[in-house]
Amino acid sequence: MYLAKYFIYSMKSFFKYIFFNFFLILVIYSCKKDESSVDSAPANDISTQYALENDSIIEFLQTHFYNYEDFENLPNNSSVELLIDTISGDNSDKITLYDQVSTLSINIEDDNSEMIPHNMYYIVNREGNGESPTVADSVFVAYKGLTLGNTTFDIRNNPTWLDNTSVVRGFKEFTALLKRGEISTNLNGTYSLTNYGVGFVIMPSALGYYQNSTTSISAYSPLIFQINLNTFNTTDHDYDGVNSIDEDLNGDHVFANDDTDEDNIPNYRDSDDDGDGVLTIDEYDANDDGIVDDTDGDGIPDYLDNDNE
Image 1: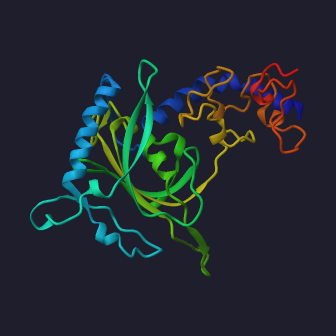
Image 2 (image 1 turned 90 degrees about the vertical axis):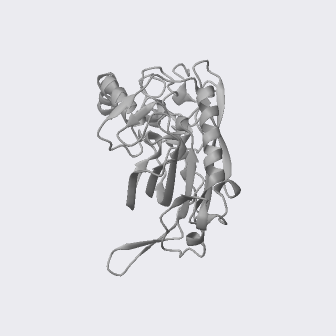
Image 3 (image 1 turned 120 degrees about the horizontal axis):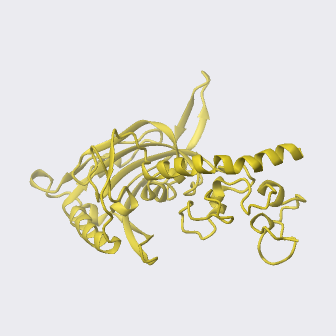
């Protein structure tokens, strides 16, 4: 057992560089990124950019509608594809998006370490019937991604597993507002999903790709995602006994900036969070009494304290 623990600890430094660079690539180009090329423009001031984009989103909400009538009396085992159109002509009597959306404010940190609130606008067509995932969990979703220009840049009609820590910010924040459905096994061994959460979100670019562009998404593009949340798995990415959501120590829903031992491996991916040579899983609750250990009583749990004598 000792040799196994020593091997894991000693290999950390070997994988540190490889992992961290892979982690950055995954976070920057996710959800779900399969574009052929990605370009990055110089970053604009976040506050100024948000003000411009929010104005354009509000105008969009006031002049467009979605096929809400198709979502009425939605069967519990299916969904309807989101369609958005302009209110004009034969559609002049439609209810605007503006009159139907709810708003959630998400703080984004700017270059001066100030938090700039960003509104994302959403509609839940069917809440779901189970629990909600966290922004750290793995979600089993079908989804459709649109620009405000009504261009579909990604679509998954069949559910796929996505890691919420690796998708764009607005996507994971919205999945946490939905609830999973019910899973039943059929006689032929297949399974059925019913009463799963269905809805869509409209977000400014800082909750999406911001200055990054692809072949179908321009830099600084507000985005729309329709999401069907079938189910999810609570995630412990590094298998250290601490759920990944609990490794977001500052509660900002950004997992890359929680790195207790400053070894360039975020806590949620680090099997030894405090870098003291003792694995987190062996320090978190060593006596298995259901209470997080704090040997020296300094208010810092042992697994985050490299001097707990």
